[in-house]
Image 1 (tube, rainbow over the protein chains, first blue to last red):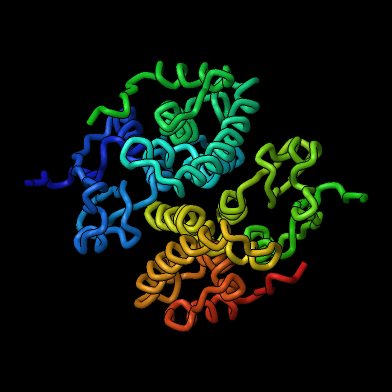
Image 2 (cartoon, rainbow over the protein chains, first blue to last red; image 1 turned 45 degrees about the vertical axis):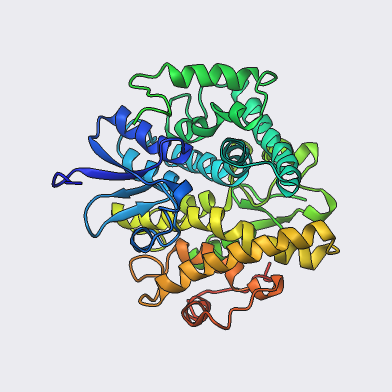
Length: 207
Length: 207
């Protein structure tokens, strides 16, 4: 594959919510980029070549040039959003955005993304069924936290659409694919539609 | 308990590495603060009063005043470190610090902190033994990533002691309490000693 000099490259996997966050933000910011598909199901994120780029063996990875590569979807969001309306200027509001980004990676994604990944790609073994039950319990707890917060707010921080919304949208809007029922979460569902209506929105399947 | 006006309050639990990160940074920054012990083993982080402060029911929580509270240890670190030598000024280096902070919460803490918590406080049931095996596998993978990175570096980012080191030190230096053997990780062990030798360092048990 020939790479145009200076074009940002995203090591990507289309059904990954973590990669989608970055695709969505770059599209809404109007940043041109090139996608490189890494088929994580075929082990392409664990090859020596990939591990040389990200020793943690995960996508997405943002590549600015041969020396500068950044892993961790939410770190990439902050890096790209700095100085734009997607990341607030006020110190306290930036702190609250980070609070939600860490909530997403610790309490939300491991419980809401994983059932979708398993149900989509693997047989449900006895071990996995037990693990699923715990993930549903913790995943619904995370959705409860979001529901209570959104009951009186349009967006997560500063009443504006920020990278906190992008990060939490990525796996929430496809939670049903992992067996979650969003019907009782009216505020979350209304927020999902608000995020979808933002200018330049693209669906998770858009490359 | 009477609270002096203007004093930052930390809702804390002494054996928690996540809370220790904040205690360590505030001590090294010379920020006076007041500790409020929350006994998570007695459910004190799940009371209605606590959930009103942090709906996610976790410590640490940093309280600036009656309206401003911040959860998520690594968000608190960034908030406190901004504008200090603990958080670099250069945009790319800040991004790399965030990359390690998200690595810590996603790939490191869930696998390295949890065995320590279980072994310290709970009987090892059959279910927990199976879960432990997976956590050891993933925890050693995280230690491998750290070892390779530190093989040619004194600290995680910019060859300086930053909040990336504080965040990763918190549970790495007590990993043996969860059954991890750090003997094969020479670069990690040397880095642990470098972090310990930083000015104003306090041990995890220091309130």
